[in-house]
Length: 260
Image (spheres, one colour):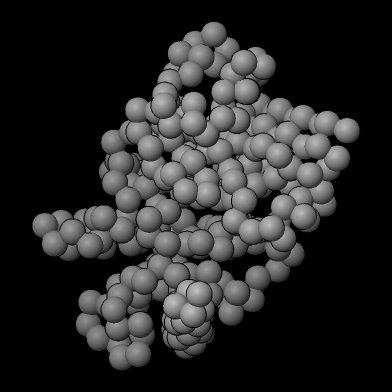
């Protein structure tokens, strides 16, 4: 039994077949962001008869377990589509979703992709904050905006689950234009504890001190002052533990890779 679902802007069969083909995407792309398990690339496509630049994310499989469980799961493309709309409802800027497609056979996901708007003239927050030529005032402005975005995210009972600085695209800073991307791990919860929130934040690696010693101009503290000033002191303590937990997780993961 074959089941195909398409949401958003209409695509014809030829377009769908091509966008399911990673080789075709790589050949036609004018910019390739990622070419691993997932292929993420920018290309030009006719949407509703009008040529426009779009970003396509064609999802692959990281492990066999996910493939086996796929009949009872939303596709990763559909998760990203839903997450985009939840974030837009929470007044968080994301690349606007255009279309999402999932192809199943006997319930198992075979192909899935997401189309979203193409964002030009941006830099990642990671690049800005690690650039020694960027002045301190601009860096602080970026951190404050990111803190406000994450605060709004958590206030909507949403966890991103991959809050790295590379997933914030900074556009026109005068209009607080920061896009949040890579949304397929985002989850909506009934409630969020401080521990859950701080662990979500801990992956941002804002300062080398890891809150082990508080110091002047610490970017972690600047972030927390703008994220939740009412719970500032408590958030410092909880985040310090979350950072240590995240570092331990990375060390264990690294050891497992070496053993292989």
